[in-house]
Image (cartoon, rainbow, N blue to C red; front, side, top):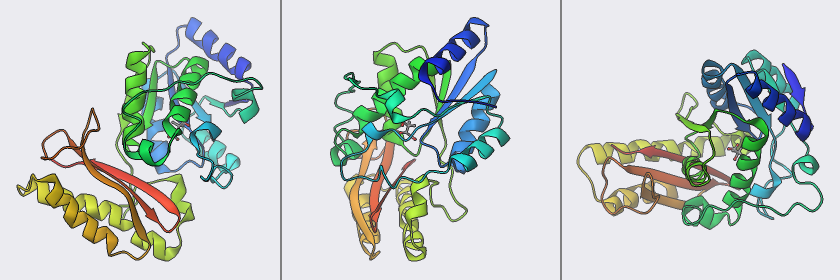
Length: 280
Ligand code: PAF
């Protein structure tokens, strides 16, 4: 496994691979790899001749009061996991290599980014689309794999790729969960034992909503009222948003149908967790 830090060196390497006719599959991450990332790497391994992983905690997608400095990092363990997952090439740049002095260009997807996480984390998606666009330009992948846990991120990236005619296939991969249902996230490490227990309210809310929808309840506000009560019963939980939205537009849906996705963001203590699922 080759590990590169320099941007130019990485781009030259991937351009040469493309010129040699290789298919590049790409998993972009902020590191602190868990089983969710490993499922992306497994799929990426199957889909390309060369599997590229990027590890970069992207400062532009964090707000001024967010956890950029404390975001969990463990490069040594990440590299060991990457090696065992069959990664060929790791790009792990420093922030000053990605955003050098004088940097002034950003990618902004409109509308979809004003909602949900975009409303509570202003500027977040501008940082995400900017870095993903830059990563694509450097890595030159034919296919890039993203987890569906960040459902809005996946929707926004698909919009960007379509709108900017970026020649890459975006593959969305199923959420990977702990045995008790908690969606895998690098931020789960912040939770105390009691918070970890209370965090189950997210996946349990999804199961409740699915049960209601599948037994014929199609009034979104009725489903959301049940969930709100359930989540608010947990002492450490504070709802950021709890919405039933159309899978493509992300706009609120009054009635549940096959396009409905339940999206939720809940603070458990100071840790903001997200989860989502189709309801039918
Ligand atoms: O999902 C993530 O880990 C990040 O948002 C991404 C896509 C790697 C961009 O920094």
